[in-house]
Image 1 (tube, rainbow, N blue to C red):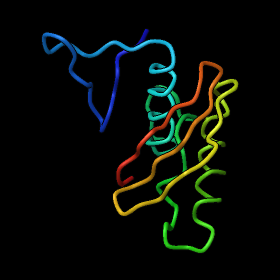
Image 2: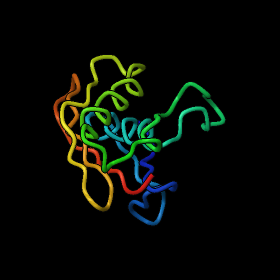
Image 3: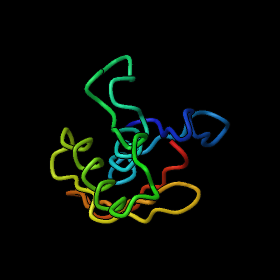
Image 4: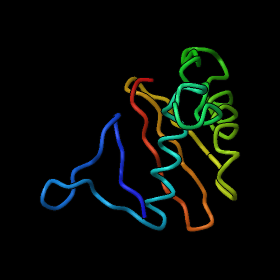
Length: 110
């Protein structure tokens, strides 16, 4: 079990306390954190994070680069892989496969 984090803060659950997630939701929460944190900037683990903030979303092969960057950031999560990405004006949406199933993770501007 873990507390759900989004956009730099806790997601409120019942009674205003941080929402608790487990299973696939917990794993997708870890993926969201790993992809949204700038590599080297997480105080508790300098190896955590991604280089997605460096991506030029207008370049010709931006989607391929985004997948490569995402999968590099997800190496610490066994069996977790970014399979597809949709790049839009507001950010990116990754389709992620995990040992617990498939899901999607939306990232805003990084």
